[in-house]
Amino acid sequence: MDPVTQYASDVVAGKIVTGRLVRLACQRHLTDLDEEGSKRGLRWDIPAAMRHLEFFPDVLRLAEGKFADQPFVLQPWQQFIQGSLFGWKRADGYRRFRDAYIEIGKGNGKSPMAGGTALYMMCADGEIGAHCYAAATSLDQAEELYRDAVKMVEASPALSQRLTLSGKVKVFNIAHIPSGSFFRKVSAEHRGLDGKRIHFAALDEVHEAVPLVVNKVAKGKKGRAQPLIYEITNSGWDRNSICWQHHEMSRDVLEGHIPNDEWFAYVCGLDEGDDYKDEKVWLKANPNLGVSVGYDYLRAEVAKAAAMPADENLTKRLNFCVWTEQATRWMPMEKWDPCGKLNLNLEQLIGQECYGGLDLALTRDLTAFVLVFPPTGGRDYWAVLCWFWIPENDRQERVKRDHVPYDAWEKQGFITVTPGDSTDHDFIEAKIKELSKQFVIKEIAYDPSRAVQLVTHLQDFGPKDWMVQYSQGAQSMNAPISFIEKLIFDGKLAHGNHPILRWNCANVVTVKNSNGDIKFDKAKATGRIDGMTALANAFGRARFAPPPFKVEDMLMVYSPTGRQ
Image (cartoon, rainbow, N blue to C red):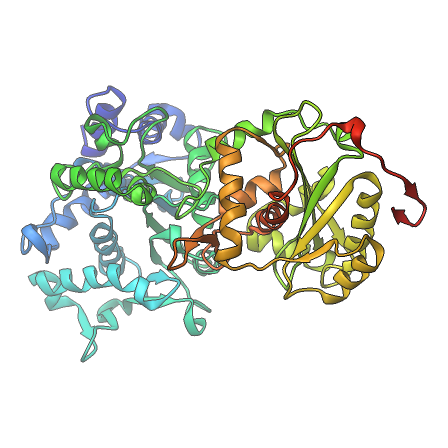
């Protein structure tokens, strides 16, 4: 049995510990071998797979660490990946797979493996003028993978005689002159990705990549007979990123939801219910455990995460392939979601006292308005209502840029689209005036640096001093953010499962000042947080509300011109 099929058989039989998605990748190989692949014109070419696998130990030498100057011996899991990519063929004889997505824990040797693949594609793939690239958002990001390839060329007697390295201070080009082929690093900087005819491209740390890089690389393979885009990454945190899209694409392909014979996926990770502190499951995210990744190293990382909880997400992501929703978690979403089960009856809130928070858009932000209602009338928890706006002319661009379904949210009534290139504040003004006739809005807190005209109009409409400037600094924001956090952990914030507010909450990253006060950090947030900023503004004033009161104690009179 060839090593690719052997590995797949051992994984499916439970002889090798892996996560569910790796097992599905192995089952896919075995299923396609068992006549299913041939029905679609696929062919398993063992000599082609072995030719590629033998290139690594026969030609390549590792250049660093305890394996320096030793042949590059592929481990069984690496043989499965590399052999699959080069052994499966289409009916026309060209390679089946054009895209490879490999998600794996830190330190498992993914960069050297990608560098070795680039060298094979450049000088041993039979392609004249094979243009190969290490691609990233910046040149510095592309450097690590490219550097591995350079060092392997220098360490290999066979390659050092056949390939030409150019550059006095730093190698900028590896060339195979007889075939007119090369391997270079390239980035989105200075339009470096434009106009490329890509035979091979390796993208490292895709969880940090911007969509522009991935999309331009994908377009660059047009016109090539059998190109390969080779994505390697740790797990990420942003579930609106291009990396998460490819993670989900891989899952859909492996689970059979999306038929795609050109997409290869090897996705490591813990299964649902696994405890990352349990050493028995570490192999699921670290197939090179005991080779390039040591047990002592992972034990130290787990201990560090226990001692410093702020680092726990980073450890889960990088070492155990657990996707988290933000880089530095402010709010665990497993705490946020149960609050959505609290009763939020709009009719019961009519006529009740509340406090507003307004976060007005500058350019790319959302505009958000939030009302918070103190406990009253037998309700022992706070209630939240929220509204959002975006401009019509920017809607589709926002869908692409933010990777969220603004168009679907509009149809579902969760967001309002206003005419023009920027959010029309007249719509917001009209909505707030309408709401002031339904609810007793005591105050509206807003960022004093934005929309003076809107604030002036509202101030003239409502009761005296109901528009309140609220500073966005940590000293002012610390109390309401801490109050919101306590309410959520106590299960006392009814937010109605509003999808945009949940998305905003999942994106929140906080920063501390020298006194330990916290505020939301828009610059470091993984996406829009405008609804949460509006919520914090509202609670900045609402926390001064008097103790709960009875509805029958309220006396309100309404007039056609507004609230009196």
